[in-house]
Amino acid sequence: MAITTYSELQAAIADWLNRSDLTARIPDFITLAETRINRDLRAREQQVIATANVDTPFFALPGDFLEFKSFRITDTGGSAFELMLATPEQISAALTESSVSNTPRFVTIIGDQFQLWPSPDQMYVGSLAYVRKVPALSDAAPTNWLLTDAPDVYLYGSLMSAGPFLRDSEALVTFKTLFDEAIEAIRVADKPVVGVLRTEFPQRGLQRRYSIYSDF
Image (cartoon, rainbow, N blue to C red; front, side, top):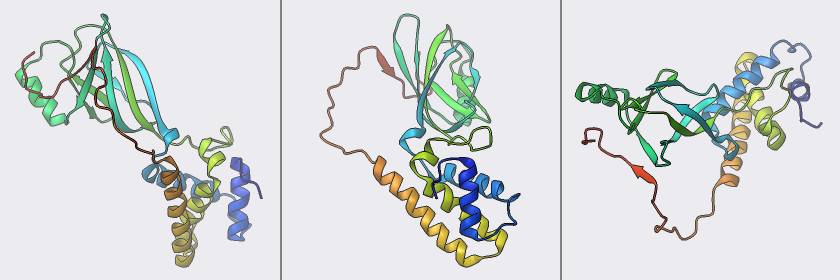
């Protein structure tokens, strides 16, 4: 049986479980599988870059945000600055030292928002590299890149999620093993081949700031 759409996945789960009375529960198994996938998987397709104008210290995380990678701002003169990730406590402490607007040096995450310090003194173009969630399947969104590339991840993850509901510990162990193997196969396939690392890349136009308490 081909598994290329949400409905085909639901049919495959019912077939593997050999149950015809779980129609209302199978979407829950898929949702639980997606929760586990987003915890465990960091695939190449999840890494994206989003850009936006930044002129305030607070702005919202992307709706599909999962994990921070890097943040860079470019001023109106074309100079780029890579911000360092700080803790909320470090930013709070820095604000007690200075609340003057300037070129942001640090970024932190508070709840569902980013906070920059210092507060931007002009309009910057922000470039956020982050890991996004796998797009959730539904009747309205019947497929995504993961179901296309690795339907086994979805199938085994859903069957694993069905184990506690069915009180079938043997099935839980079996499908967890298969799920973990499928996740690991993606990790191995995405692992880059590392050659000689060049260290003489030009740094012109890019500045990094390290000390949260350094002078402007």
